[in-house]
View (cartoon, rainbow, N blue to C red):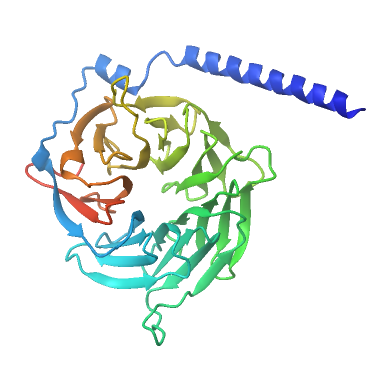
Length: 376
């Protein structure tokens, strides 16, 4: 068979696949006769009542000299680790605003950080294509720096996100610009499984974010520049369990819903979306209308409240919306009191009592529920 014939067959097959994908999309739209908000309104559900005093800034964490790119809370809720373009990880006491560790990194171009479940170590990764582990209990060297306790090397592109497997300090999942996700054994420093890459069911562009299911740690979801999110089972690395379409831009962030049956996404297309992992259907779109000449801000980071009734979303223009997930309405915008730059990351404490936001303005802010409002 000649090269010309192969190209012709490939073009025909590509067209067939695209036609099938379009038919599948149309069929899915026919089945989705309503969304979560439409059904909730039909049942007479009321939106969450929120006043500006219900979520107030109680702490400003100042210490970084560069853009803050990532943050993570410890499970015991009183410590935060943040990663900045100044080439440092800082571990904060969230109750006192004091720094407990300032870790100088081997590579200043850090993009992600994570606390271990036991809170004894932190991980980070970035443009050096490695995931570095620091034991917070290790003695410092002669220069006062905390040494790297383990380096996980194997990605062929930048490390965009890392997350420890819940209730384990020995396994971590990373995502990368090499279009793969990797499950690592920290004890040996070796890759346990690689998700994507040469497999056809993997992402076709940089993977930007991962989120592990808190109810079933064998399942995790990834978001990518190919505008899709994919569900993976760590026991079956050869193929994605499901692929979720809907976004029209890079999927910058993914986060599992508290019950583990759904997950949320945030994208460069300015929308957050809620998907069901059991049916593969999109349940809701969260989008704030903008003027015709206004540039649509990108969604950079999301987090759900403990109950899942609230969705916190950070945007590239400095807005931080609190969405009612049931009725798809913005109940509060922290933007006017928020940061002076892009909100690059946010996260909720383990008990749901506080929200932390990080920004390119070099600061982190801790927001606590006040007034009559309790944890939702």
